[in-house]
Structures are given as C-alpha cells and as structure tokens.
Image (tube, rainbow, N blue to C red):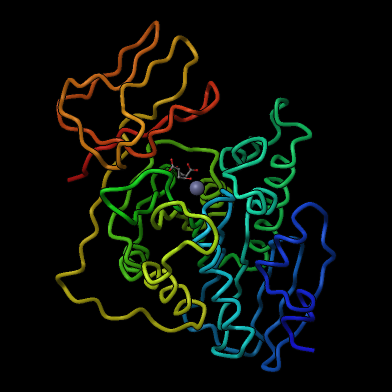
Length: 344
Ligand SMILES: O=C(O)CCC(=O)N[C@@H](CCC(=O)O)C(=O)O
Ligand SMILES: [Zn+2]
C-alpha cells in the first residue's frame, strides 16, 4: 500500500480525504516516508510534517501554511494538495517542520465561504464570545489555535505563517499580502523577498490588531504571518493554477530548505499600502456607496463619500484612498471593507 493510501485511504489524497471527513472527526494517523520524513494526520485538514532529526534545516525555520479558511477559495487549497502529493511521490525532500492546514472542511465541501460564521473573524480567542458558542466554526478556530500553538511550542525558531486566500472581487493588483498589526514590528526584508519570489508584489499593512488567523499567529505565536491573496475565488477544478506557480515554487523551495534566489534589481520593489480606516457595518441605517462590482484597489478622490449612517459620514481625506474587500453583505459589527493609501 502506498504512503498516500495508508494516510488517506484507497484512491484518496489529502484534499479528497479532508472533504470526506469534513463532517466527522477523523482519527489520528502517523506514517514515515522511506527517507525518514514523518507525517502525522492530526485530524481533518491538519497535517504535521517532520523531517528526520539528523537532516539539516539550512534555513533554520518552520512553516505553517494554511488554505481553505474560507471554503470557496479553492486555488490555494489545490496548490497545497499538489505540493503534498509531490512530497509523498518522492519528488523532493522535506528540510523543515511544516504544519499544513485546510481551514474549514465543511465549508470547502459545501463550496461556501463559511457555514455559520466567518472563521477568519474568530481567532485570538474571539471564538469564545457567547454568540458563537456551539457553532462548528468556533470549535474549529479553537482546534486550529491549539494545533498551531503545539507546533510553535515545538518549533519556535524562525516561524512563518502564510494563510492563503483568494478574493471575492476582481483586483487591480491581482496578488497582495496583508501584514497583521503588531505594535513596533516591521516587515523583515527576507519576507518581502519571499513575497516577490511568490509573485506577490503588493503589501498592505494593517493598522490595528484583528481576529484573523494571521493576526493570531503573529500576535500570540510570534510568527511572521501574512494573509496572502492569490487571485479570484473560483470553484474546485476551475482554477488556472499556472497563475499560482510563483507561490507554489516559492513554498516548495522553502520546504526543501533551499536558499532564496538572487533577485534582479528591476523586480526588487514591493508596493506598500497602509490601512487608514476599517469600514464596519454599524447597523445604524448603514449605507455603503461603493458599487457591488468594484475592483480591489480602486482609488477615490479626496472628499468622496464612502459610507454613512445616522451618526457618521466617512469621506476620503486629503489624499486619494483606495478600497479593498468591499462587501456590505456582512453582519452588524463586521468589516465591510478597508480604506487604504500608498505608503511613501
Ligand atoms: O475578497 C474579500 O472580500 C475577502 C477575501 C478574504 O477572505 N480576505 C481575508 C483578509 C484577512 C485580513 O484582513 O487579513 C478576510 O477577509 O478574511
Ligand atoms: Zn478568504
């Protein structure tokens, strides 16, 4: 029996196993590849990969890589599944500890962003709020937090977390990363280089702590964490994975422990924006003046009214501001969009 079958069952790979175990707990399984690499299936969509203790880890690092925190954002899920299949097929050798995560299996199975509540608003303990008690997504946030904590306790040195997503809207900047706010922290140049290597040429700096998965890992696990947007939401099988070779190659390179490629000067720039305002659905006769089909990073002139309610009218300030993630169809209190502006 192949390692893949031992781990996932006859005819299955990680993705099909995750979809088939979405609704019930799957038992833990451990297998060891011929080259000594250990794989521990910790539960549905949770896979810990560990190189043998005597193998060098040249970049002296550990990685958490997640996708499917929103179940309908399928392209990065396919990227991770393909990388794992390559490893299981013996195409390359793992050099560093990796925790691979498919975030929300029931939502993936249903082809939906989430089932009851947006999983990517429940981290950093937000899942403990009374209104979320008993919801499967609150339970899942807890499970993912504990799995990441256990991994980080074992592998604290040089921990990075990439939470891979795709966006609902088209985007004037197809691939971009969000850097969670941590007081006093700057983005390391090595991370900027990695993003460029992955064809992610735009970086958005958050202005305050959030309750996303990446915020949790950066704040509580001291990881260098990014939410990475890799294109537009499409159902399984409808993604053009040739548009994701950058992230795929860059992640494979890190997992193999190879050093970063030399960058040529012309490509060395990342465009940086900062969040200046988070639009929340206030529920107080909230009106959002951005059309439904507008692309991420569309810019608005000073003075443009973006949203209003009975108490507030938000206008663009003295310099142009752009919109990212416009979505007025969210519950009261949740994020409708981010207003951003270029950093100098
Ligand atoms: O396209 C959209 O509106 C949402 C895409 C998405 O899921 N983005 C993440 C970003 C998380 C962050 O702010 O760091 C999300 O909304 O959870
Ligand atoms: Zn998402």
